[in-house]
Image (tube, rainbow, N blue to C red; front, side, top):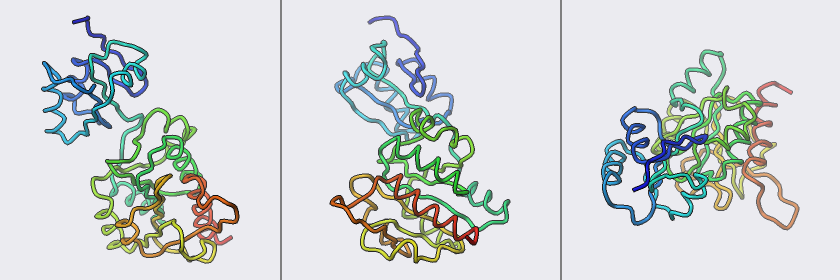
Length: 252
């Protein structure tokens, strides 16, 4: 077997030994990518460690790993680490309380495009949101592209990653935070009262907000669509509604 290269490339940890040491370190890990068909040697140990720690494993084509690593000797395994550390939901709520403000939170439901999440973080920071909540599965994490697209805003924005988005919404509602879903067939966004504690749910680029999550929300708000397409880019829709929340909070 070729000599292993312990390469780090932005958010990538490459090579079997490097990934094992990463797993032992306790550092946050987005997911571990393993080449399809790899079952021998330390790959089994890596898989077992991931399962023990609840880290997502994705089986991908070896060519994808070759491309990601610039043909570096990844030995069939790559770990993605976040470009920024995560906060908790309690951290977000405590930050709002420290500022003497009602919580203003953005919830992303399966946003899979890194550029969209980065743009949402940038708009959220500009609008004075206290934090963003994303699910652990089927949602892009805080990778290098997200950090770059946020243009520095990620350094100032608390992002919590949760296992169960529906349960988190129920928790927020128990804390007197109203949850607004941005989706089709809702009331006009500009005629909606966003005063008080507010959490805005933004859905995925292709499917919008999931049915279960939408049912958990208190209010559905919509933007008018006058063209042939029936939806806006997720980050654009989020930005428009976020600024309406901010406008109302500033009394403008």
